[in-house]
Image (cartoon, rainbow over all chains, first blue to last red):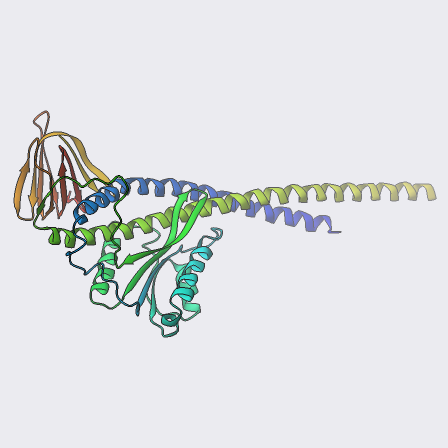
Length: 291
Length: 82
């Protein structure tokens, strides 16, 4: 049986923990709203880009240039891992890291052994994990994931593109948490490069005969890098929103647990207090009887 | 005809217009009603719009893409200099 004082201390500490988790939940909720807003704002651009690209590529499969689609033997792999900078967001980081391990250890076992799988980490948690296991980390950044800005995402996307074209890497992946809704995140591994030509969606009609200026090839060379930039930016924005969602859910649960714990502790405290009083009373009565 | 100018972080302009002038890679060109379908890249320059009320708006851009189809115009730009 704990003493009254011990229980009182525990109640105090649990209730202050509860205050912190409740505050974190509220902060995450506010950030989540902003992050969702950012997703909504980039959506028209992304879908228009996708649409135009689709219209331009139709008919370009056969003789188009292949610098972005070239399917080389996968020798050098680059993985861009997007995680959060901080913990306390449930299984958010663990899930995406697990995904990376699945991808590398199953699909690219040999390259992993030869140290031909390199990483770029956005977010501290992924970096910590990989560094601990001495994976080759090319670069890491802690700000891009915290506040995704298009200009910087574009810069990184351009760099990745150059590396692919220069054949420094044969496969480039983005591994991040996709934002489904506030409570659900899905870790995904997206192939960034080489590009896979998309199948025409069902019900697809050959678009109007476009005038293509300057020419289809030049257009594609301009459009594809742009579409890569938005793809990377979208991944970062998604991951950020997913992080806030995960943190909000995790903190909500923590707050609930603390409330429940507090209720139980209060009950034990009251019982112990009553027991002490009863004991004291009966001692007094017993003492009085003895006189 | 309807035009939308979109950047990754916001919709910069949407509305019914009479005329659109863009800095195409092969030279500046105008889009009026019933223009033939076209996809073109843009270079650095100014997008000029004249809307239904004859008001003129200008948007300096660093490059982008334009698609015109059936009197619907979509202009994608990455950055707009303010």
